[in-house]
Length: 81
Picture 1: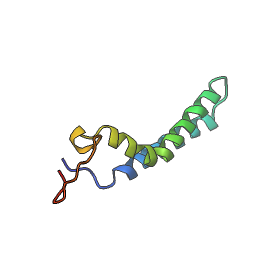
Picture 2: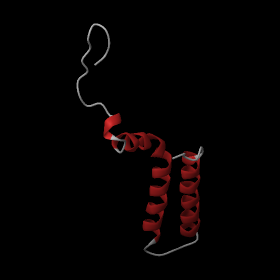
Picture 3: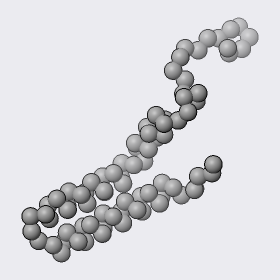
């Protein structure tokens, strides 16, 4: 299954879009829900910026178990077993 080559770029663009959309709405709003809206906007921004760091952790934890070595390696004199 082929992955799109710009998947991380698309994810960043989507997160920034939602941040700008919510921030624009909150900039022109007043009332008790405004701080909650700003918190959601900043949450989208935080997730977007940090996605490149936690993406690899999730990728590792959800990979096939055969690809992840959790055991010990034994070596003979001729080759790896």
